[in-house]
Image 1 (cartoon, rainbow, N blue to C red):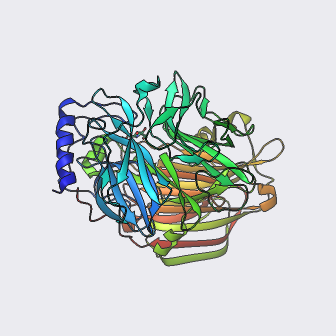
Image 2: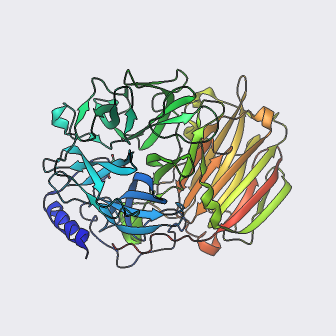
Image 3: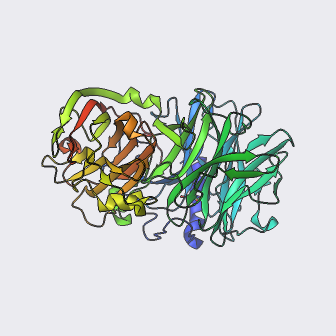
Length: 577
Ligand code: DQQ
């Protein structure tokens, strides 16, 4: 056991005696330190980021340093449910192949002895990374700490030092609720007053609040007079994220960029609902305010990065490829006991490049281009008609571990079903009511993935087009209700509307990343994204099939389909815990 191992053992000895910390995660004290004797790999994702075993949750402090990408994440080194949380640490040259290092930050000091929770990295002038994270102190208060790399000449940044002047932000100095005060963002510099700014998630009653702190030297932080932003009725805000996007093009911007040609994104993770939403708006550095655009819904009905299992996300600026990258946690839909039995739980969704859509109303996300290096055997289909009620199979590749891109041409929209405006803010309910099996006018059409040969077991990924008063409405769904015969699995339909002018384009594209128990889909080039976790009973490994189907009255045509089997990347196999 290395020195970090000894400190980990000391920290957890303390924690086992006194800890029963409750926050946003359900705590199973009886399960949290049970390490599996063997790991059940049957449905374990292969090309999504994960350690070989045990529990993971939020991505933390992603950064790029001296040619290497770093990802830290909330990790339980001792079990496969939430608990004993450390900042595990992995490094990569391409964000697809990962090498595990020793945990970077773990309970060791009074200011974090009961937990090292989520936080972010900032790159200070002179290319000096620094991490701010939430520590849990002996009074179980959530406080904010800083850590610096011990050796800046090590591109792997293996060791981190926590200075004695921690915590750098103490809730009692600024009258915030110490039991709901966490997840500091990346800091950004405001030249007009030569200060650093960052926000921390909290709540006032049922109002979600992003408290703003400022610092001249990154050591002493002072609470600003008012929050950067808040919204009533949204509850505790976890993992806030604030960053600029360019009005034109898909290049990313560093976190501090402001001015003409720029808009801001403000994202929060809602502890009460376990989903996220974001708004687009304007950041006013002199007034210390973020104001969402009038047409950007600032409540639980707001836009989401992903309408499925995607939480506690965090973005960072990648200076090497001038892009903004988004990481998000794709939680299990399994029970805690099943997680304990299989010996692993949680993956990170594939890192996505994120930029502003040319319509200015929403973001677009797309898997980083490096993922395509895993594409291997290919199967292609061109100009194939799928009649009403028809389907065809995509054969001869391992479809349980695949990347598929398909474009559907829709013909006449005459038969589109009438859109019920009652569902205008609830795509998920509409998809639950009208599933892949419910025959429609134009659609449902799409993919059946992780399917048994007889299609009895399958996860459906599909579109359905409705006629509203003045336009057509495109719904994108994940329907996992037939994904498994196992009981005690959460199988919610997930859905979002797709902001496309289908009357004009007459086509819509879909990309799905299938990875044994992950289905991660991108509609219309990444305008609407949905991630589901599913646990097939039959469609496992080589027994998984993939079909293209059309259950609408109108024919649709697959103008092009390309499906690739995916190779296995290097995936943290050398992890020491
Ligand atoms: N997970 C962390 C918290 C954060 C929550 C604890 C979000 O810092 O608020 O593991 O999933």
